[in-house]
Image (cartoon, rainbow, N blue to C red; front, side, top):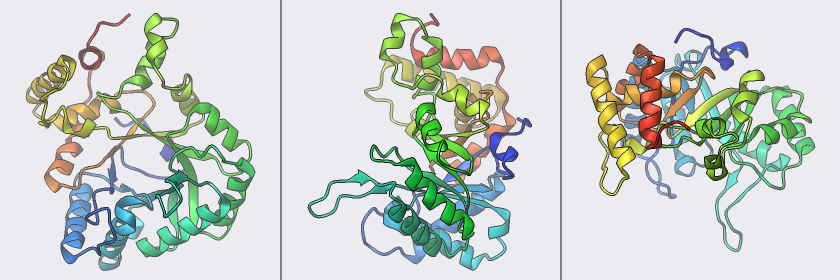
Length: 324
């Protein structure tokens, strides 16, 4: 657990866990946030800090911008906090508008306007890390590079990364950008295993059904790109969630997680996250809960170091079949 993670190499003293802020700000509509939503944000931030979490993940679309607004209110009411934390946000997803479908937009105009909006809602002058949210098929790397350069020169963004991209897409984008791309956020959990199966099933018939792009994990490790796992708790399926209608592999894994948690005297969340933390890539799970009790339960993950045998027991159980 003490091994430096890639973000440390880039000058960010980030915690192993990240608090994802998608659940802040209330509903995904134009209804204004309330004092209760600000209180919820205060409690989530305080729980995260008490669990050793100093990094917070946003996106300009979360609850239609209200997640950043309530977080900004927390920062305003706790002016000492900004220097103690790392703030990351994402842009590039645009909602459906009248006559126009939902889409992705990596144009320089949209990227720069998005960052201005993010900074305004958060009430800060500089964003630590900006991620591009989902690959835009119309992306022109030179145009993204122009936006990134201007944002960096103006002191609006310290560092840049991506989300949901393959090694080839990152290389393509990096070919035009001066600043190193330092993070890649991907869905990874005990439920979402294609990031592991892609390597395990190389040259195996089972590999034909795996969609995870080959070489992405290895590339990110070689280039010191921080891999961040979104939805690492798999919607709570292994930590007390409703298992009705779930396959036997999910039910068996949930039971195994519960037994391991009892044996190690930690929360089930700690076991689920420890599975990701054990990987040599130095994965940063981005936990999406804003419940203080569950945030603190997740914080127990750093007390757990799974043995190789324990890790494989979890992996095989969740796969629902033996290793090839």
